Amino acid sequence: MRKFLFIAAVATSAVYFAPAKANAQATDTTKTSTPATAPSLATTPATPTKDVAETVASNTDYTTAATAIKTAGLEASLKAAGPFTIFAPNEAAFSKLPAGTVDSLKKDPAKLGALLKGHVVTGKYGKAEIIKALTEGKGKATLTTIDGQSLTLSVSPNKTLQLTNAAGSMAEVSLYDLWATNGVVNGINSVLK
Image 1 (cartoon, rainbow, N blue to C red):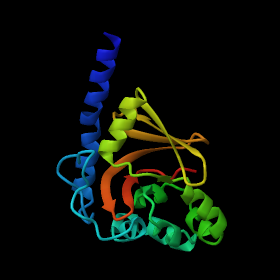
Image 2: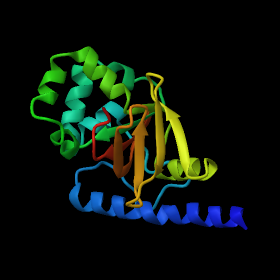
Image 3: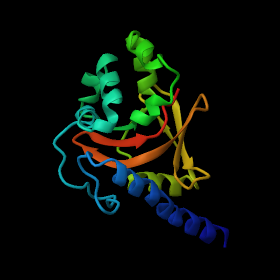
């Protein structure tokens, strides 16, 4: 009985992720590809033509993230075969930081790079793969960032996907499934510090 209830609860979590995607579609009309429904685990939507770094750069709501990737010298690494998943902070996420923080980070590429690496994991984790990982992990999934840190995925009290890093910094996914040739980009509403 417990197993049945758990499976039912996790299955309905897919419904809870839908509002975040719907809201993102209403406010983010420049994204390159987001299917109307979640992709199956066996296929990826329309064949992407850009790598993850180019995918971030091609979306105007991720201009600061794209500039930060380039400034930190991560662009070449993110053009590699991967696959990578970038949990990219949107413009609103960067605007939440204290005044001058972004400019200060841009002056210290090593520190900026360390911050950004905490937003990138190895593997393709679109919406469907995240739901599968949460189901297998009984409501939680832990991924490892490219710098070896833990990134825990769970369902937030708002019924959205929440990310928590090892330092306890949290963000919620606001956009799913910007597919790239070497991975996927998901947008988040806060910078993981």
